[in-house]
Image 1: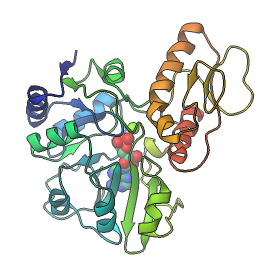
Image 2: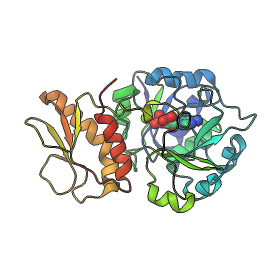
Image 3: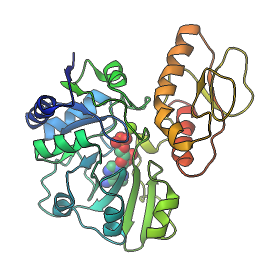
Amino acid sequence: MAEDLLPDATGIARAAALLRAGALVALPSETVYGLAADATQDSAVAAIYTAKGRPDFNPLIVHLPDLDSAMAIADFPGTARALADAFWPGPLTLVLPLKPGHGLSARVTAGHATVAIRLPAHPVMQAVLQAAARPIAAPSANPSGKISATTAAHVRAGLGGRIAAILDGGPTPVGVESTILAPSADGTRLLREGAIPREVITPITGPLITDTTPGARVEAPGQLASHYAPLTPLHLGGTAQPGEIIIGFGPMACALNLSENCDLVEAATRLFAMLHQADAMAQSHGAPAIRVAPIPEMGLGRAINDRLRRAAAPRA
Ligand code: AMP
Ligand code: MG
């Protein structure tokens, strides 16, 4: 079973030592828990794919402590530098052209000429990145295709038997994954809705390119129809049927509510924990389905709806 680490100097040093030795460690970030490995070691990166059951064509996000380390491994075309200045450290991932001599395992990028990079803002994650002193690959710390983990307990339930350690930094503050952008000289492509809403990005980038031109998108579970899926079927909106577990939004009488005040930030923070909770309730009561009230398609609501649509999609 995974070792339990605390977010203190001992826990941080232990996490860094395990990572340098090629082991897998779950780390808190501001978005969701990440399943971290040394991005320069082929075998460590391969272990991420095995532990998650993740298809190996789905590239990983590389986490770095500072802009200098990012500029050492990638070029910053188009609006990339302005985006980095505005949102790093923070929940924004940039897909950028790799520089020669980048030193990353080819498995991290799934053989692409680009790399996805993020500078996280979570102090515990930052401390581990500093101590490990190497680029850290970290997808979300959940079995592939399942609900993301926003607490150490979620990580333990999903992956506890398959990883070396879990560093418990408490519940993750933002609760949904990073926004992924691919800036280029021709404009900025939105690859994944996430923690930074479009409304605060477009003043920097101008209109975002959101089409799915063949080749422009990496086909990956995070971008495929079914993802973030509970065991129980999930429906969005519509009329509640007898026995269903309801997740509300706004003033409504139900046991689980993403935000009684219609606060999308609060709803994002609670989203995955409530999906885990609703799924456990549905499984123990034999409920036929989970039904989630409609969420407005604005601000963080776009990222929430993206997750919910994929959670509701027919399973492969
Ligand atoms: P996660 O599994 O939640 O960490 O999400 C990582 C996401 O980043 C996946 O959906 C990948 O497709 C995306 N990604 C990582 N590297 C690249 C890349 N080089 N080009 C496009 N998307 C990428
Ligand atoms: Mg994920």
